[in-house]
Amino acid sequence: MLCSVRRVTRPAPWYADSVEFDKLLAVLRAFHDEAVEYVLVGGAALNLHGLVRATVDVDFFIRPDAANVERIRRALRRVWDDAEIDGIAAADLAGEYAVVRYGPPDETLVVDLIARVGEAFSFDDVQWSIMEVEGVPARVATPEMLYRLKRDTGRPIDRADAAALKEKFGLTEEQ
Image (cartoon, rainbow, N blue to C red):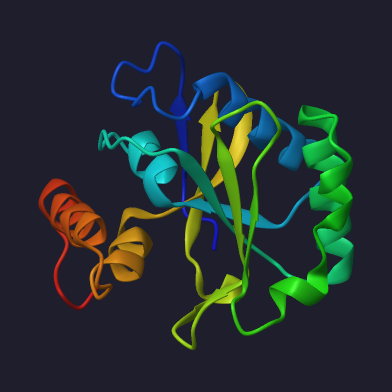
């Protein structure tokens, strides 16, 4: 769902340094150039919305069909020269645990590709807007969507994120 366009430019003093901004930007650029169907969620999305939170991974909800997964592989190969990228498969994203983690060699960054969260959310459920990040159009989950994704999990960090989103954006339980 396209909601709005917001521009984010460097320096982004509120962006937590634990995920290297340049790598995130490179992935977003490659995903845009390869026409990947994705939505940025998780801590990186929170940071782009101005809520500073350290994270060591970048979470993307993705459309799990074979054509999109091929575009994802092409995009990731533009950022990292790693044969392991070819092991990312649509079949894995259709399984019981619909998440694939990719950890580039010699880096601490981890890329999580999420097809669905249980029965609660799939790619088509995720509301997003375009944020222009250093001139790169990026699909980022809306604050309301991030709140919905985080408010009912058992992880303390997610509950804290949900509370921060609720406060900053004036969200209600219904959102």
